[in-house]
Image 1 (cartoon, rainbow, N blue to C red):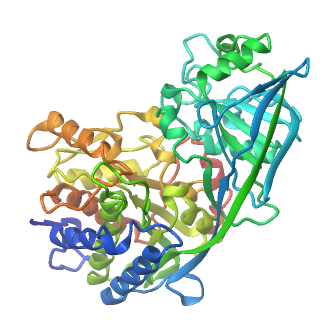
Image 2: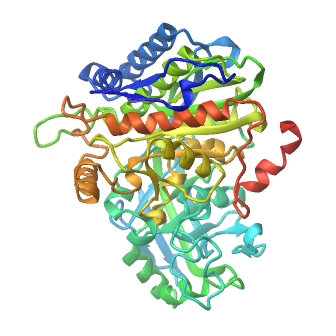
Length: 547
C-alpha cells in the first residue's frame, strides 16, 4: 500500500513551507483489522464490545497527542439509550360497523416504539390520511391544513410529494424531483406525527419510494432504540410501516382508492382525509436502559478556539445476530464504519502533525448510528461546541476498497457551498465529481452528519453507497462490480476486514477531507447552504454569531 500525498498541506496555514503530509493506507488497514476482529464482538452499544471499542479509541487519540473533546474535559460524552422490544399482542382495524380486521406482524405491518411505557394500548383511535405529511413553508406546501391529529393515527405516503409527480401537477419540481429531501424521510414523518399529538404513525410502504423492500422495513422485528429524551422532546408512541397491498385493501374497505389518493396528495390544495376506520393495538413492551458513549477529541484552535470544524464517523456496528450459513454470528462492520473510524483517526494524526489550525478541530466517533443516528442525535440535543460557530461537519461512512478512482461520488449534490470546496480538493488529485446515482434513496439524510444538519450546520458526507466509482483499473464496470459485492455483505457477517483491500482510493477520499478541513480551519471561512435549502433558514437565524 502506498501513501497519498496531500498537496494542499505542503504549505502551512501561515504560508510557510512544510514537508508533505500523507494518508497512510497501511494505518487504515491496521485500524480496521483491530476494530473488526472478533474481540470487539461487532461493536454493539451497551455490550462488552463497546467497552473495548471506547478504550481502544481513547488510547489511539491519546497516542496522537490530542486533547479530550467531550463535556467537562472528558473523552466520552455519555449517551443514555432506551432499548425496546414489542411483545405479542393484537393489532387490528375496526370498521364503521364494528368489525375487527386483524393485522399480522410483520407481514402486514411492522411496528416499534421508542417510548418507555410498559404497554401499548390503543383501544380504537381514529385514522387520518395526511398524504405525504409535509409542512414546508419555503416550498409553499402544507399537507396538514390545521388538522387536529391529537389522539389519532396518522397515515403517510413515503418519500416527497413530487417523487411520482408529472408535469402539470402542483408538486412537480417543488421538492427536487426524484431526489429525496428531508421531508421524504420516515424520520421526518414520525417527528411530525409526534409534534402534532398523534398516538401512532403508519407509513405506506413502497419499494421505489422507500429505496428498499419490505424485508428491510420489517427486519427489526419490533425492536428499536432511542436516546433518553426529556418530556419536552416527545416521540410518537407507536410508529411503523404498513405493507403496500395491505394499505390498498385498507383504503378499498374504506371506500377509497389509494392510487387516486396518491394523485390528490400531489396537489397543494390537498387536505387530510378522515378514514372511516379505527386502529387498535395492544401489546407489552420490554424496556431496557443502556449507557453508551460518543468519543470526542480535539485540537484547540490557535486563533479562534471557540469556532470549530468537525470530522465524524460512527464506531458502532450490528453486534451479534443469528448465525449465517457458516455459523458466524458476529457482524463486524469492517467497512461500515470501521474504515470511516480509521479515516477520522488518520485525519487526527495528520492535523496534529501539521501547523496549528486557527479554529478548533473536533474529531467525533459516534455511538448508535446503526440504531438511528442516536449518538450524533444526542450530541445535537446536548452540544459541546456551539452550532452557530461550527463551520462545517465532514463525515466518513463507508469508503470503497477497490483502488484509485477517477472521480468522487458526491452525496446530496447542490446542498451547500461545500460542494465547491470538494470539487477544488478533487481537482488537486486530478479527479472529477460525480453526483450520486440514487438520489431518491436519501443517503444524505441517513448518516450521522444529518443530526447537526438539522441544527443548521453545513455538512458533507462521503459514502461509497452513492454510486459506482469510476475506477482507474476497470472503470465504471469494475466500480459497479465492487459496489454489488459490497452490498451483498451490507450489515451482514461478511462485512469483514481483508488483506486484499486496495485502500489507495479510500486514502484519496480521506485526503480530500484533509484538504477541505485545512481550508475550513482558517478564520473567516463560513460555508453556506444553497438558496432554497430546507436548512438555510436555520443557519440564517445564527448569522450574528459568525462575524
